[in-house]
Image 1 (tube, rainbow, N blue to C red):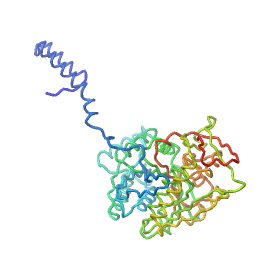
Image 2 (image 1 turned 120 degrees about the horizontal axis):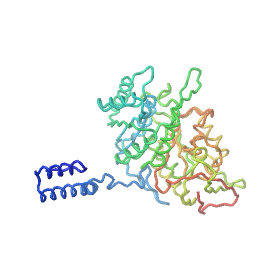
Image 3 (image 1 turned 180 degrees about the vertical axis):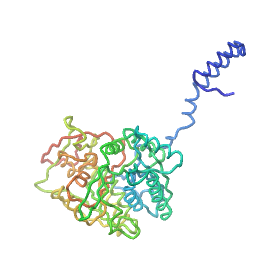
Length: 452
């Protein structure tokens, strides 16, 4: 005999005793059994089912940890787990390009596609959920006036099924139907449960080339920007935000549809090292040409050291935020050198590497973005910034969640034509971020610790 917890079972026992079906002794035994069953169920389930057991969530990222002075070869044979999120069919070409370019012969790819659907109180939203449960098809975008929900479902499903068949990739579609305020919880839960190494999020703005060569901007809404911000704050793994400017739709793409020219901008710090690792993986693809530009400080009489201090007067919407962790610039410089040395050793002759002395950092970055030479630019968010990036801390931000360099490349009316991928490395030590104020002085602080 089995018992369920709740008031109903006790009412049944009372009725049984009242009708003289149960005597006092039997009534007491049944009540005790119901109580014991109720109280031991939760502890038993928690003891037997622990999905997080054995998962190292402290650091789930692409890049291996490098000790100063050592060159550690990453374990490339492990399966790479990616979670790519999409708002609508317009995200599909760019996602396929990014995913395909990260495939290597050294490790298998396990791909999860999460279609983000906003849950509203409108009847159409409820009907949409019922359809998803009934037919099991993935859904990416809200139906428009010119396309019904069924047409959108079929178009998206066919796109990813075709890619999986042609590319021999197992695609596991997941649909998240949730309010925007809690959407990040679904994304982070799946990432943790599936042991995802990196989450790829679409930016809340999309650029499209119109007739005449002008770029038109489509904004899917501030609510989706909030989803990205919360995912970056709570993600159990590394995160990449893709600002798409027609990636995968251009006429100059390769015959197999992947990105052909990629530029990685390296300034230093954990986020930039993660971007460097991602760029290295892309360099292994035969149809991808990767160029790594390492920016170096200008040494001399005009060198200015920058120290960042927390500021309570600034807000996170219009000001860049940086990690509260203590930074040792000498140690960070050694880790940067080790990461670059390892990249050059592993991908010598495959990825092009150059060094550039910084003049005006904003103009240097914009020149690369406006050049049309690269279809994709990969940068780090810069939460643990180098002195060069820290110098931009006081500038007004349009998209503060992307960091100073990512914001420069995605800001309005800047003339950038390349798509941008902003990478944030996962490390719980850097999870807490605050707006800062910049203090400049001319003393050489190399080897000292500065609080951000």
